[in-house]
Image 1 (cartoon, rainbow, N blue to C red):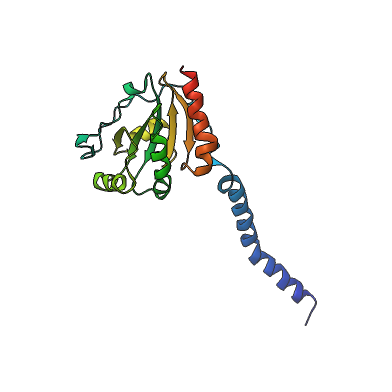
Image 2: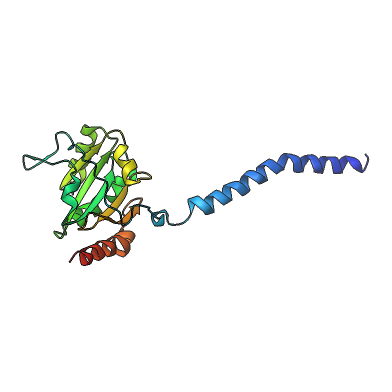
Length: 196
């Protein structure tokens, strides 16, 4: 057996392992660059700008105490602090944040409004029947156009709109117990103080 044969095997082993090592390196970069960290902190170009003026139709068949729940009318943003939640029945994190939206809706100083994103009306109504309806109004965004205007990356997302009708804050991702207390309530309080 010659001494060049083990070197050739070692070189072949490295050539075979090189793509795997490169893939692992790229995967780590993506993990630390995209997978880890707080995505709710991604800045929005819409902060400080007027909320989109798209009127959305109501969720068909949704009623509270026999009265139909209205769709989303941006004219209602003026004069009140509003929290707009973009949600869908097929969105797993939306199920997890539902109890926190109900808790938020108990604060009578604000209006909690919903944009139902690319959903089936029956499924959306079942979702609200299961968890409760925190929304004073629910607009349907069947084709996703309104979500684009709001700068939505994906559901769920939550916006705080001040009394002046401008977007004051955007939370990307689900409302969690941690960001509910530490961030969202703080941003709502800021919006309430700014308008008084």
